[in-house]
Image (cartoon, rainbow, N blue to C red):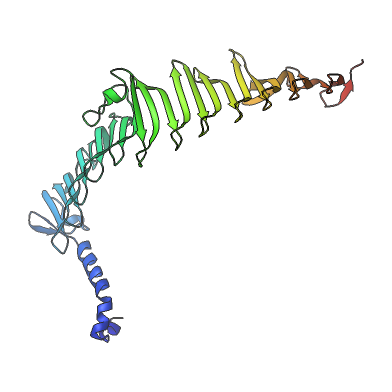
Length: 363
């Protein structure tokens, strides 16, 4: 290909000039020349840095800094800096004798503004850390315990509006954010969370660091999901975009206690209620016609992750009269089945046997 290029006319060379310059620039940037205390070293050969102490500086062929690393007796311990292609610092931190980040670490944009500031303890991020939007506005603040678990955080959109919030057991995010106020440590606090377009998507109420009410919104601003907590009791409701209640769940001591759903016309659609004791758990189910009349009801015994019908299960017509009824024993086996006509007259009354066969009761 080299011979072919040499044969090109001068004007034809111009077509290849941008690509040639780009490759040459990238090649120059990729080459790194490193030295310690003025003595050239080869980073691919450990022998060249053995026993040395000082600051290793690496530059590209243009003379711009690429990285700086502190060396102590041949080991990379201490300050490290890495640079953007324009020569501005991209990242700086320190490493301990174990090779882990230790102390304050920062990351920068190409214009020199800070993007991230955190503290490390032997490789683990601890305490307060902050990240920033381009331009310097706070993007995220988080607090981690020495064990590494995240205890609290706050996030802001590029508009400076609150986007996400998690409160800790006590105020932890100052001075980056006033979580003493946001999290209700000075009294009940109502906060709004925004999306990137500036629209409110969630409303929260905090008290002593715990959410006691939440409201997630549809795109039109109407409530989509609401949740209220009162001690061991939690109530969750779901709504359509035009404000109609679709479902309600009630939890007690961490377990579902009742659940109700609704038709779009506002009538009840179904309900379930749980009855728990030390040795058993029951669920009573009811379903409804869209005119509000009861359609069916029955009780289920919850056994090792499955539901077993017990007692009497009945079905009803939209007009309200009973049309079918089945009785179950304690083992979940049907033992009697009855059916009624439109006029309420009993038309079927069978004894049901364990093999599924039937026999009419004498009348």
